Length: 88
Image (cartoon, rainbow, N blue to C red; front, side):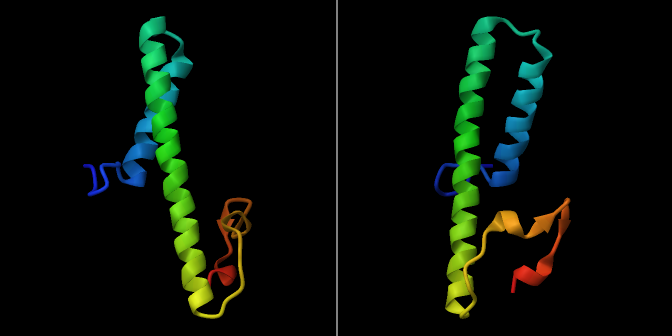
């Protein structure tokens, strides 16, 4: 389902992107179809990247509003285990 901006919700776009990558990696589709899928994948990738940037900016705004210092989302998880001490 698309939201008001016409973009898919992040989880939907990511799932579709993962499906496209899996289909391309199989290597069984004709070149024309592969190119269409690649183009769709690039658009979905851009949407996902924008959604992540927007989320990071929103989190930063909330932290600054509460007097918390800057942080990088890539620093919150180590070895796949979230360290929530940096969030608040």
